[in-house]
Each structure stands twice: as C-alpha cells, then as structure tokens.
Image 1: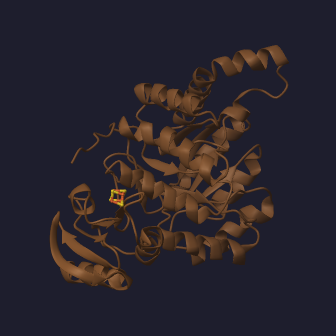
Image 2 (image 1 turned 120 degrees about the horizontal axis):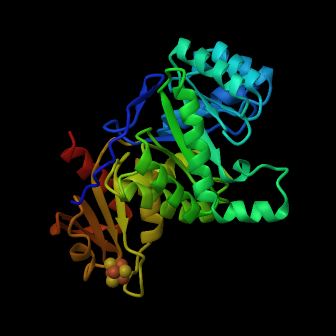
Length: 360
Ligand code: SF4
C-alpha cells in the first residue's frame, strides 16, 4: 500500500489535540447555530463528536457568543476554536471565557496593537492562534475595481505575504502556538497558496476550500483541493466546507483521508457501480451497510459486488465481500469464495457476522 510522506511541521496544541506532524491529520467543522444559543450549540457539537469531529469552531459575533464559550465548554469533549472577524474585544472575551484557540482573520483584524493584546492574552492562557486568511477578505474592500482585479490575479501571493507578515508580528511577542490557513473558493488558488506557504514556513496547516458550495460541488472541490495538498504531504488538519449539514463535513473529511490511506474511521465499502449483469439490489445493500457501520471501529475493506463472474476478482483486496447471483450470493474472503448459495436477503447479516468473528 502506498503511503504519503508528510511535510515536517511544528507541533501545536489546541486543548488536548495536537496539530502538526507527526500527530494524525485531524478533521474539524464549524457549528451552524448561534453560539449564544448554548443548548443548540452543545447539541450540535455532541452530534459532531459522535461523527468523529476533533476540533470545533463556533462563530463569535458578539459578546453574548463570546461569553457563551464558558458554558459550552463544560458540556463538550473536543477543543473549541473561537472564530473571530473584525472585533479584537471579542477575541479577548473568548480567551477570558476559556476558549482553547482563536482564529483571527488577517484580512479584517489588522490593528497591530490589538493583535499584540490578543497574542499576550493567548500566551498567558497557553491557547493556540490560527491565522486564517480568506481570499475574500484579504483584498481591501475600498480598493478600486482595477486594483481588485490586479490583486485577484496574484491572490495566492497576496494571501501568503499577508499571512506570513501576520505570523511574524505574532511571533515577535514570543508566541509560536500558531496554525495557518489560506483558503480561497477557487481550488487552484488555494492549492498554490498552501504549497507556497508550506515551502517557507513550518507552521501546521489547516486545509480547506472556502465557500465550497452544496454537498455535490463541495465534495469535488474539497477532494481535489484538500486531497491534492494531502497527497503532496501538506496539511495537518482539515475542514470540508459544505452549504449543508455539518455532519457531512466530517464524513467527507474522513472519506478524503481514507481515500489517501492517511486515516480511516470505520470500514471501507468497495462496491461496484452495477451493470446489466447485476440482478440484485446492490445499491441498497451497499448503502445499508455503510449506514450500519458508519460509527464502527472495524478497519476492514468490505466488498459488495453485483455479479459472481467479475465480483470476487475485481474485489480481490477486500477482507470480506459478497458477489450476487440471481437470488443468491457468494461470500468471499481475500478473493477466495468461502460460502455459496447465501440467500440474497441475508447477505448483510452474513457480512456482519463474518466481520464480528474476524475482529473478536
Ligand atoms: S461486478 Fe459484475 S455487476 Fe458489478 S459492475 Fe462489474 S460486471 Fe457489472
């Protein structure tokens, strides 16, 4: 099996989670309700924890959100990174409330003296700062049309330059618990920006494509953008952005990591696309198995194939699998058929039993 060699990055801590090599690449998400609504925020974070979320980021819009962090943290089990834009006083309040990390946007929180105050407060509390650049906010809003167009042409350089300068300013106060992100909604801009930054800095990188769209669009953009960087060994924590359910952000995050043999959460289902040779409900069976096993610790490769002619051979590397005949299926292990004539309606229970016996 091929494996990817990670770039060496500095190890940074956020709460009890380490980010940077050699720590595992973590998967994170944002809450999608107001932080001040503690009950709903906690409920969403606990659901995300169950799905495998390892760092959570609520948006902090006002003092109520910032203060709510204190109560939220009492009920959750993963580190919390407060997402701050524009308002330094909210960063300070979030730090006071016990946040594990803060994200500052170098495009809209620029006052050097305020950054100094935030950095010193973060240093005192031993929390992390993520310098999180976004293509949309790095270009000054007052710039003329022509200037904006020119800046967008060199967006990746601009993002890297501004982010690096921001890091240097924070470092000047003896603070190095820094992570960095350089997200654009354009995949290529994002990839170039991260690549460039990874060449000149060893700060751990939080990867993501910003405003990646609804699930179908985001899946493609994130798999290409985040995936190609990970393939090059770049990236220490990832957030898939979806206009939709945050649980899907976590699921997709793990799918990207699993596809690159970086990390797996639960088993891998390999199933054929079906064709005219298939006479059974392979689509429903594969989906059902995925649902049943999505929170399982079993690290097996499970094949669900539509015909006996090609199935076992095509899924030779599966630990266990079925290939369907007319109303029956065969069970195979490592490409070898071990049981014939299983009624198709019991294939799921047969697979589950097989998994149980080989993992007990
Ligand atoms: S395994 Fe069989 S049914 Fe599935 S796509 Fe291949 S040939 Fe078609």
